[in-house]
Length: 261
Image 1 (cartoon, helix red, strand yellow):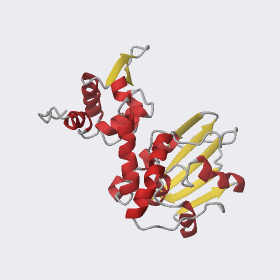
Image 2 (cartoon, rainbow, N blue to C red):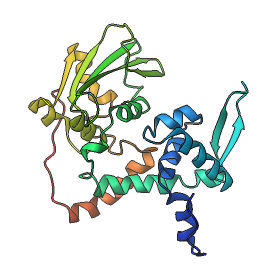
Image 3 (cartoon, rainbow, N blue to C red):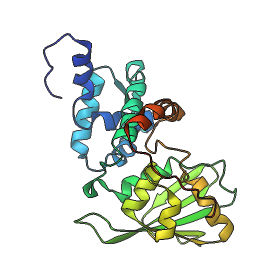
Image 4 (cartoon, helix red, strand yellow):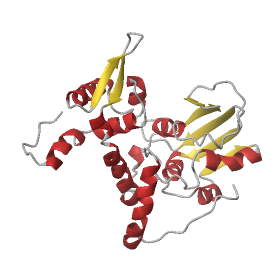
């Protein structure tokens, strides 16, 4: 961790925890409820495992994280202390700020289909999904430079369990989602509407008509969940409270309905 700022100012002391690269994202993953090293690592795929080990040790030294050896004796469980949990509104506020003011700042090199799938996995509207096993296939094109031009993922939803994999699980696919990665990422984050993307062909949904119509509800693609990488509903409430302020500073944009999906 970087050296301190040499100031007793509370902002400086907080920045010593949050100012290091990756720390806010590691905390984001833990605030999601991820307690094990591999789960935290999946949420920060560009962070080396060695650096993650270092950051977790530093956060533990600062009293933000506490670790316990697993009952199996292999690996550790990482938990937030009360001081770590108290950072929740700060991490939420960072996301709300970016949602309001940084929606145009997703560069091509920021796109990551693995991170997108991992994010969707933990943000499924399970109450709206039918009780039977549902298999979704995602075919993404327009991947960033240095990666394959197209890649497929599968999501299996059964009960309260959601699994994501790159290897075909061998089940019949209920809905095929073909999409440009940038377009779909912007829709999922709430920066763009689904309906015009369907009209333009940057997103295509194929399968049983009844299931296809439910996809926006299952995946929060109708704009209900405006804080795509958020922690909980309080972030959405913060955004609603700040929307009037943002509207005064930004040009208005047209809204679209997905009711015809």
